[in-house]
Amino acid sequence: VLLVIDKREGATAHILATHCEVDHDLVSLNVGDFAWVAEHIRTKKRVVLDCIVERKTVSDLAGSIKDTRYREQKARLRELAICRRLYLVEGLDVSDGHSFRQGGRGVSGGAIKSALVDTFLQGIHVVRTASPTESGTRLGQLTRLIERRYLRSGDLHTEEGPSGAPTLADFNEATSKRNAKTAE
Image 1 (cartoon, rainbow, N blue to C red):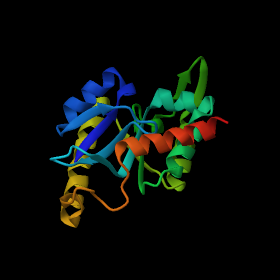
Image 2: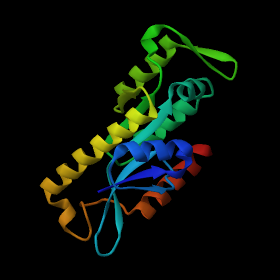
Image 3: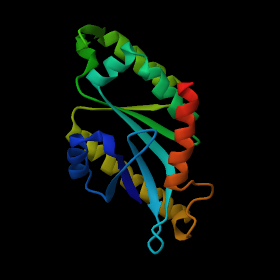
């Protein structure tokens, strides 16, 4: 089991990868910032497992609420044929009542809390961390849990991997088509 990190995570990808302490690779993902793949030892074929994470800093979340990217990204996550979808929010504690500034326009802590509750109610689990270091640690923990679950199930003992799991290339192609439909 390999953690794949979207290349667009930029400099933060290095911090996350350093602290996750698991095998990982930087790849292009059309949806989400992190996913897990099973890589066949001999053929190197990669199939996408059933967990994906969208990562947001609090300031990016505030900005995406203001410009409506937040709704579009949640819709794309919900459309995936992946049963475990997580929204990882990194940064300040919204319980402190501060307004978060993005592009000169504030977003209240209440609006952020409301958005996160809505995300949870739509079937996307919300995980909050304080920093990229903590996020990396959590991603490492998730990787080990996913690996244990799939090893126990026996799904990693075949060349095809888990039944119905798309290859990474097929996953990106399918989500690319979704992106085009969403943009229309």
